Amino acid sequence: MPDVRKCVILGAPHTSNWDFVFVLGAAHRIGIPPGFIGKHTLFKWPMGGFMRDMGGISIDRRKRDANYVQQIADAFDRAEELALVIAPEGSRSGSGEWKSGFYHIAMAAKVPIIPAWVDHERMRGGIGEPLWPSGDYRADLAKLAAFYREKRPDCARFVALEATTRTVGELTAGTGGGGADDS
Image (tube, rainbow, N blue to C red; front, side, top):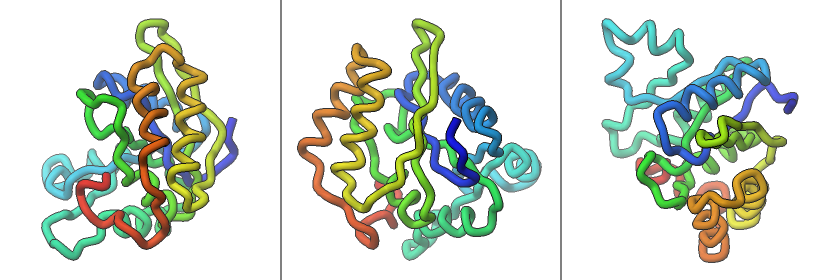
């Protein structure tokens, strides 16, 4: 079991609403309260207290200059423990292409990325070892793709992810990461 107190947990592939429940369980298994990102409007009365109690982190995207990644990095700074659960594909209808927001968040917060996978057909899943982002997005994405392909070699989304690692450019700290499209 990874021994980290703050991390970004990737839940992939994201094919069902139940994926989130599994990955929350993975965070619980490593003994860290799970967290998730939600629009600020979800944190208003009457649901605000419940959302925060469940580990929700409110993000306000109304302002054009509001840095989404920095808001999450600030939440990591305020927390003693935080396992932020993210679906890197962004939606259940994805083709395997990942958005880079998870990487920018981990870089800004200086926390590792922990891959978690699920296979609903075989009723299996698991979590991997922490990957500390190096600043070389392509190389780190290739490592994550290799992990997921080992766990689910037949998963078309992971085949697509592996192909993406050959075409994606390198991201470095301080580039991108501020826009909603990066998450």
